[in-house]
Every structure is written in structure tokens, then in C-alpha cells.
Length: 142
Image (cartoon, rainbow, N blue to C red; front, side):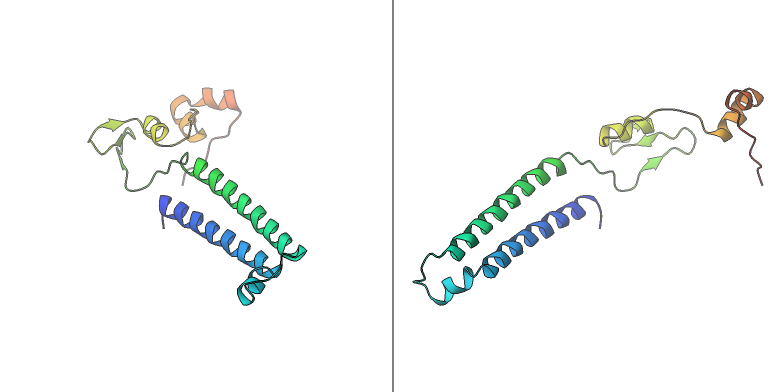
């Protein structure tokens, strides 16, 4: 399961759980079953408490759905096969244009990039200068 499918499944599971919680509270406070068994039942404190509980859980459900919809729309997911140049690491988009990997990911997600250099490349590019500047030790290659 990937991306949006997973988010949709989580959304529906949450909705079902809230619905079941409302039913459970109604049954637990003896509102739903007495109402079904004896249609002319009186409004007791237990019935009113059950209604208030169900209303409260319903409001929580609507708030949770509102928040979830608001933030699910902000989530951007990278998925599928990406064509990456083996040399320069540019990525080809669906229109056969090549983009720097940083630009491609920033346009399709909320990720930001900062650049640094790993110790292996620092030593390969700058040698002893890098070692002195960082205090790094040369790695032992097999």
C-alpha cells in the first residue's frame, strides 16, 4: 500500500472508530436499546447523559475530520519510479525534462536542502586540507 491509499485507509478507519464509539456510548448509557425496545420511553437523566455524550463525541469526530482533511491535503508524497542520471544525479520528469535532484524534490514535497560534504568526498576532493580543517581521520577502504 502506498501514499494516498494509506492516508485514505487511515481516514476511513478513524471515521469508523468514531462511529463505533458513538454507538458504544449510546448503548452504554442505556439510550439506544431502550429507545428501540419501547418507543414511548421517557426522557430520563440517563437518556439525556447519553445524548450529551453522543453529541460530544460527534463534535470531536467532526473536529478530527476537519483537522485531518486540512493536513492530508498538505502532505505531498513522492512515489513511483524515478529516473536518475548515474553521473550528475539529475531526475527526469514525466515530460522528459531533467532537473537537479534538489529542485525536483522541493517542488514535490515539503523538504528543504542544505549542502555539505561527506568525509569520504572531502578527503577525495581536498585531501590533507580537509583532514586538517575538520580533524577527520582518513577512512580505510577495503
